[in-house]
Length: 320
Image (cartoon, rainbow, N blue to C red; front, side, top):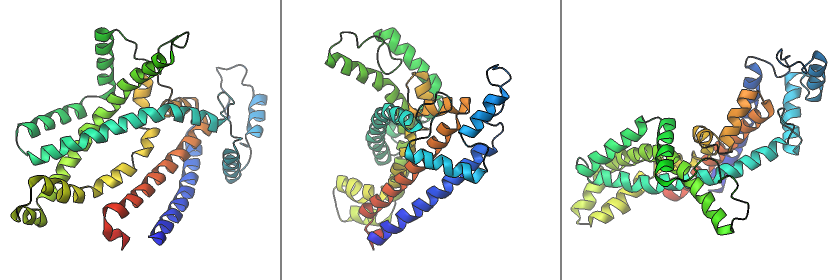
């Protein structure tokens, strides 16, 4: 088991190194240069450009730029080209904003998907299964931005409450702590539910199909022939063996902290990581883009490492 974990850690460190190189090369191969003169900005003179290039080591060879960038990144000296603020500080602030949105949305998705999918598999072809299938495909088909605007209009018209941003404008002026807390919860609820709808629709379909596949195995028919209770057959024998693919899926949800909520954060004016990455791409803020790519790779590899550990728990054969 220890050797398995050790090999997994070494493989992921090597993978992260190559991912950092590929990300750095792709950013610099993309059209346009960070130091090119902007004809629409009279202050951006050739002299300013040259000073900019020297300050950020853009006048050096590409491999030297790579070493300078990651050295400054790990020492906290890398700054945004847009506002000259520390990249790690900006990402950490946005990370804390995205984290509750991610946690609540993930809890809602995984808490509802499994009961819906399992019940659809158990009552295959019946009214519940057909209704759940119809609603799932309906939620998958509706564009997220359209559903978001419909939901915002409905909530504002029916309940007359603000839903944009992380908190109601001016709430901190004289409001009590419980009032501020409930206001934050309210603003968090709507984007979290919206982000979970698509995940519930997709994941419940996976749960249903995986349960149906396991329910057709010989050992399940043998368990039924022995007279075991249906609940024990479904939830002890079938469900545990159907969990293995979802261990992989669970480990890969961590990158959703960055890329999974760009549309939602933009519509609800939520200052999260996805929105920051989108704005950095538009502004060609290369330090932010490269750092976000690096953090995304770390999250993916951390998720797969968590999956490796969960495999050891779910499938005893892997420990052997």
